[in-house]
Length: 371
Image (cartoon, rainbow, N blue to C red; front, side, top):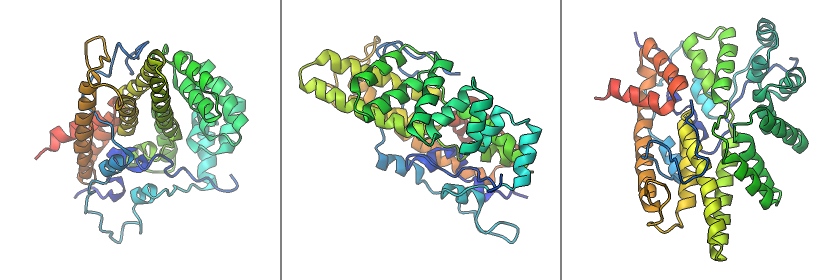
């Protein structure tokens, strides 16, 4: 008998499908009312992502990638809920928990930092900030979810201090400095980020924490793993995408003024960010956002401009990005298989996605089930 999991259709787009609209506020847990990244380059000229094969989808193209037909085997039966859970989450819905479920989960996890992150509401995050002042994941969550600008700013400063080799805090600070009109501070943040080798945005930590939460409610291990990965809020990727646009604009402005050296420096710092996102390997969305940023920065360049120490030119890189976009679109189609996979293969897919990245899991799926 085939497994009955209509809601998992498209989970391979863990973020590809949901957030491509961009980005990225899928449903979060609703609480009861009472209740190995390779080193990044020091400069953009030295080390591009190892796989030269994406593209720079526009927002329209990103939506097209997400719009591939999903499985038609979603006809409801008497044993299925009125609306499959996957479809509910896709529309921005939430998984409701009872007060007893929340309290039991927190008690069994001793109100740990990860358990408070899994719940994700502001009250839980604030409790975590007080009890675990040295937890970087909590700082990151508050930096993107804090209620006030000062709350977000304070958490972002703490995140940067706690993760000295992670450029994420510097990138977010750069974006917010530009929004506030302080371009010079933004460029200083970017210069600092360029020397930091380990971009990491805690996607896997959040997925694991959420998986443990859903397991505690009685979900099957496979469904809990899928639900844990799906629906993670990632508004920071929108901030990084917007930062890339702002850098492309600044690059053009300095080039128009004849300040080629400044324009190239801005381009290289932006490329460094783009390549770190592409190399992070977590989800297709991370890679696609990196591709968008890179394409925006290279579109105005002379195709013969040498970008890398190996002689790769802007034109060659843009062509490689277009190939990669097509490849991602092709791989995304294999998510249609997920509703029909036997339990052991679905679990293998989800484990691979967590351990090696979404694109790797899709490639495995394509090799195993290619007609």
